[in-house]
Image (cartoon, rainbow, N blue to C red; front, side):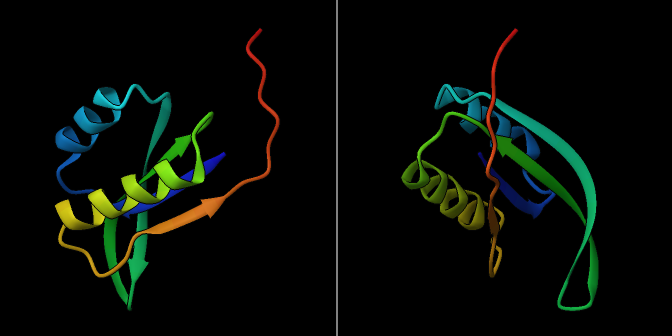
Length: 82
């Protein structure tokens, strides 16, 4: 599982990209800090996705939001639908 942490900008465009790619995701509103500046953020949790697709998605969001960096976290997990 991967988590992408990014500034809360272009939210509707980000959701459209996630849907277009057919990804299952959980989106969490958050508050973060980057270089001492507090900002409204989102955490996008992604399961059943490859590292490469995660990197491509993060790069797309970084470009779309005109950010210096977007954080990707790798989270060891085991998921099951019941």
